Image (cartoon, rainbow, N blue to C red):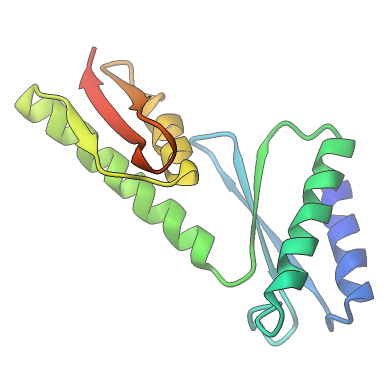
Length: 147
């Protein structure tokens, strides 16, 4: 992970980001690391040109693969990913409580792939429930059931 952070800081300097800050936030519950990247003003990066953000993310993924990092790494430029992770974890825990209380499966409405991944990961920590995704593409749902 240290090599990844070092490489990211070098890339940011090439992009003329002044005093880049790379904060590593590890989620102890799942195999997930969030890299919060900001400049010294703590403002969001790449707002002016989202294409640069996409290109930067592709380079980061290449570095992750090259260094054989198996942990899921999420790059967050503006705090939105951290917010999504917290909200999704809360939804997962509420769904678990509902399933255990009512004894009926709970179906999440359409979720994006990242949200489904998080819910599967968080709820896999509990032996009393199971999760399963159904459907195709945009119609994919996730069902939480009692074991």
